[in-house]
Structures are given as structure tokens and as C-alpha cells.
Image (cartoon, rainbow, N blue to C red; front, side, top):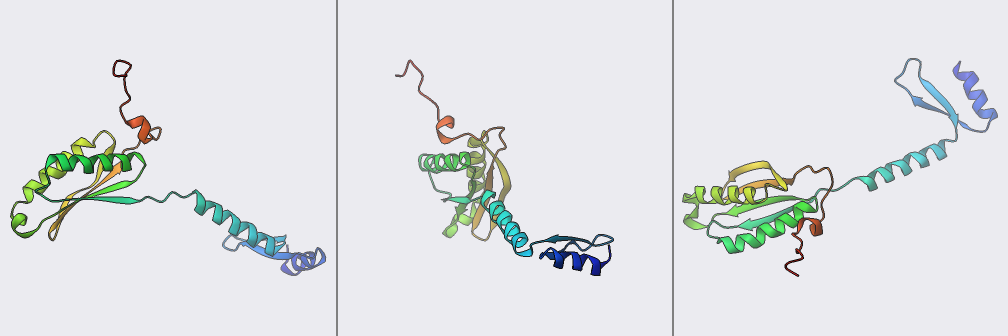
Amino acid sequence: MDTSVAMRMARDAELDLVEVAPNSDPPVCRIMDFGKFIYEKEKKEREARKAQTKIEIKEIRLRPKTNEHHRGFKTRDARKWLLEGMKVKVTIRFRGREITYPELALEDLKEIAEELADIATVEVPPSMEGRVMNMVLSPAKFSKKKTVAEAAPSATPAEE
């Protein structure tokens, strides 16, 4: 339809002529209330932003001299965060001459990855950055998200 005819029809209906697909051949226009169109478009964008999930990255910090008992507390926290759907960054910071034994930190990171292998995958393998060795774990893809209560071992009738 000719542009002038379409504009006249829009004026008669007391609405706006809005170009909705400018890149198509020929361009597509609609007769509508432009204010209402913009309002509904912004409303859809707000709803889409609400539906997005923000992925948090939690961090556990260790040293090469951290003993297994204390590392257990940290891995328990990491397990809880992974089950909640968060990523976990495991950082081992070297101080002083500890930097001469990076294999100790690498071994610790591998053990942590093995402990959490049932619920996590290694997203970024261990790497050195200055005096820090990092590794990032992300939650493994499950068909159904587990909650912390489901993942914790439940008491058997014999224990009660």
C-alpha cells in the first residue's frame, strides 16, 4: 500500500503508523497506538530480566600448608554452593618460599576436584597467576536440581 494512503488511514483512526520491520522488502508498517506499543515492549523486557538467573562465583582460599581437616570445611562449603547452582573458584595463595613447591598446590586442587566430582565439573583447570594458583568448578548438569537437604546423607532407621 502507498505510504500516503496508510498515513491517511492512521490519521482517520486517530492512531500512529509504526514501522515494525524496516529491513524487510518492502518495509512492514502497522497502524497502532505507539505509546501502548512502547509500554508493552518495555514490560516484556522487564519480565525477561526478572527471569534471568545470575550466576554467582564463590571463592575458597587455601594455602599449600592448609591441613586436610581445615580443607574439609572449605570443601563442605563449596559443595553447598555448587548444589545451590553457584560456581566455586578455588584459590591457593603462596607466601614466601612456598612458591618453589607448586606441585603441592596442584595436588591439593586435584584432590578437591576429585572430592567434588560427583556434583561439579572443572570449568577452568588449575593455572598459576603470579603467586596464586586458581581453579574454577561449575555445577554438573543434572536433570533435576538437587537441594542441600537432598544431597546430605539422610539418617537410616537403624541410626535413629
